[in-house]
Image (cartoon, rainbow, N blue to C red; front, side):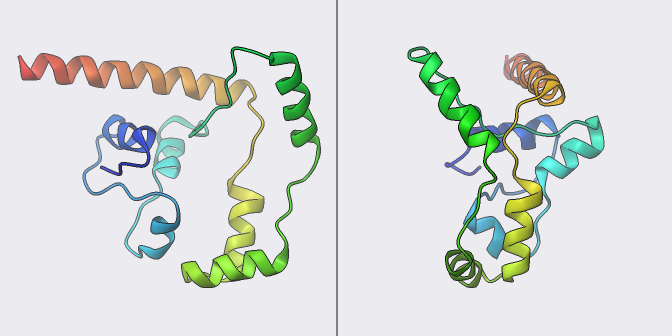
Length: 134
């Protein structure tokens, strides 16, 4: 289990996979990894949502901020991209491809459907785990 992501740990369990969960920069350094989100997509034909922005207060202001963020293409300066790519041991092209084509922010109907499915599968996993312990 990776202490940095309960979501990734649960995803591994929901997918019934064995092995160590490694996320973030550590995952780029590992050479023998599988992408949990890719396995999820192959199984359910839905994207996997690792994070949500949620707010109870000031929703109007946050909505404006989020919409402004979504309208503008996010760019990382080339030198910053090169620095992190070098530190991770990947090419600048790989880093740019990851940021441009793998990570995205809008939450559409497919992402919402995927979230509901993940929550249901997580519940099932936890209930089954509880039953087998008793």
